[in-house]
Length: 256
View 1 (cartoon, rainbow, N blue to C red):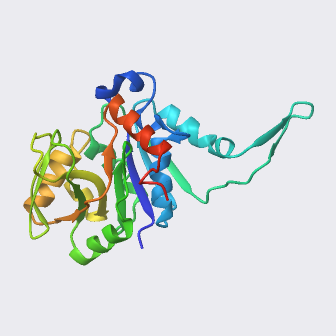
View 2: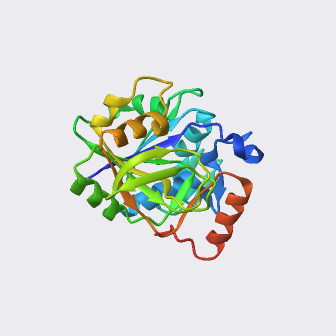
View 3: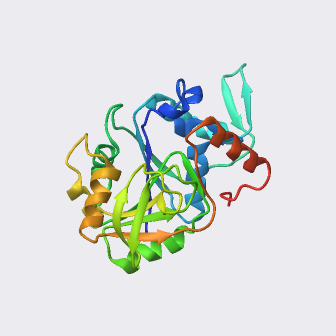
């Protein structure tokens, strides 16, 4: 059983400055709540109750939101006469959330290394980005990881061709190249399963998870590919946000 989800939530989001100039990208709303909460609720459906958020840019806004999450989810009654707050509904989550300030300039690999102490030795854990939604079957992803007996498993998807490429041979990742324009290849979908051994391949704050860690794992045949052919969408721009908003008003494929 895998209990923990680590979420990358510290980047600047420079391609989405209309929103991220004031707000960290994971805190941008899709419908009634931030995209990071959509992601967490999705994993919760599959039994994940522990979340480790790797913050950085404007991490205080992420902390403030989760400190007040109970108030956000429920109807409340405020009695100013006696300074009491009464919860009129009881939508309480049985989650444990750790929000770690991993630094503004830290690279993705460095962010992951900074939460190493929250992962037990030999433990497997989920990892994803705080700006992507999908209907990937987390149970099948987990099964694929355990069956492979590899250090890492990456979900690969086939979206529009402005992303980087992942090449595979018999479901083993042979090459991992970010940001290459080739619409005919699979790309990193951002839904990972990793073993504690991954920390061995992270040198420091400047380590890039995608270019350094995943590339190294693929070079030693320790990165399994899980193919997902269903819905997947990252939120890299205002048009992506508007598209996800449209889906939310219809029938969001990631909602459980």
